[in-house]
Image 1 (tube, rainbow, N blue to C red):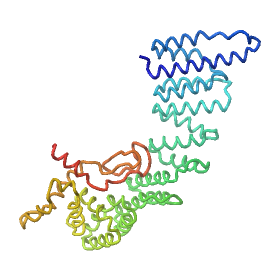
Image 2 (cartoon, one colour; image 1 turned 120 degrees about the vertical axis):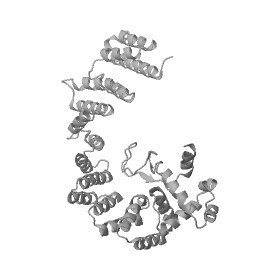
Image 3 (cartoon, rainbow, N blue to C red; image 1 turned 90 degrees about the horizontal axis):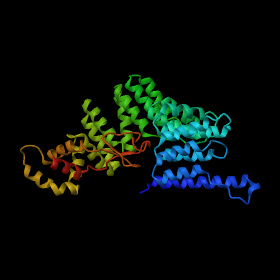
Image 4 (cartoon, rainbow, N blue to C red; image 1 turned 60 degrees about the horizontal axis):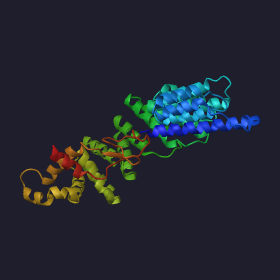
Length: 399
């Protein structure tokens, strides 16, 4: 049976035949009484389609149609059609043929170049796409669109300086605001500089990220990590505490660092006091503290252990498998508490399941990714609010 593509192309041929008839009708006004002949080439192409010889039909059409002022828009439409169908090589051929015309108007040449650059982008030829978009970003009517697409290319290539430049040029032109993205570009540079041991440059990049742009907690988290790596524990703790006080979803990132610093400094009593103050101010965050403690296997701190115990007792799915209260009562003084044993087992199981999920597309990952690899949006991942007990327990049973 004819495919959807066959019907689509057949419709395109009939449309072009009608357009050809109309042009012939109006151009040959001196022959109004005689109907214009139907071009035999259209019939030949249609015959290919009816015999499901789609490739032959397309090649025949490419050879048949001349690129002139009457057919150039048809070429653009056909190229766009090929790109959407994934036949990028044919789209590239069409748009290259268009821009090869020596008498092409400047506006049409820009349209051809923009279409060709999108073909290259669809084909994964980023260097070629970048080259053409860079040319169009310099004063053409596609300047704004070219800069937006260039930012996407630079993100994929991790060329953050170029991405910042393109984003800032776009802001000047009044295009789509990339303020949040630019802040993340600076944070990427800061993290790279910190990894290389250039902490002065890293601090400056963080300052740039937060200068006159929408505030992202990534900047505070990056600053805290820099302070930690330079053994400025006082500054690190101040920043980590500010993060968990102001932002719930970064507790999973900041709390393990807070526990580690207090433990190294032998200041567990101060940690206990700080967490009690946090929970007194934000009682609703007890479940997030418990979740983070389970996932990171944090224990031995009374206030955290209390959060975890209450969290486990309130979890209905876990209660279907284990009567924790009864186990704990029967444990006696010998061995570990049933809560400790179950929590330790859950920590091992939870480590095998995704911890973060994109709120835009649902992509899941084990670690926090500032840019979702699936939908390419920035700062859309959030940690799971609860351990997926049914998933980890099922995994445990089947293995």
